[in-house]
Length: 69
Image (cartoon, rainbow, N blue to C red; front, side):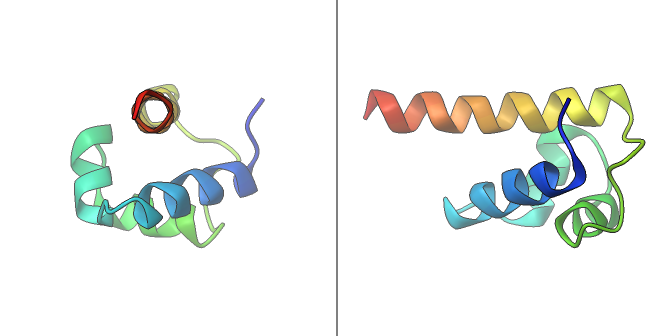
């Protein structure tokens, strides 16, 4: 199970690799305010399945691209 800090770390990692919070929100299918709240650790204990899967998928794509390069 992924915890609140993990969502924060995923978002910060995505940002450090050039994505904006607007881009993350668009890719995941949620609002920028949700991404902001997750990044600040204010949300995440009861995250919707769709948002969780979207963030995890986006992070995994980034990791796969970094390892392939």
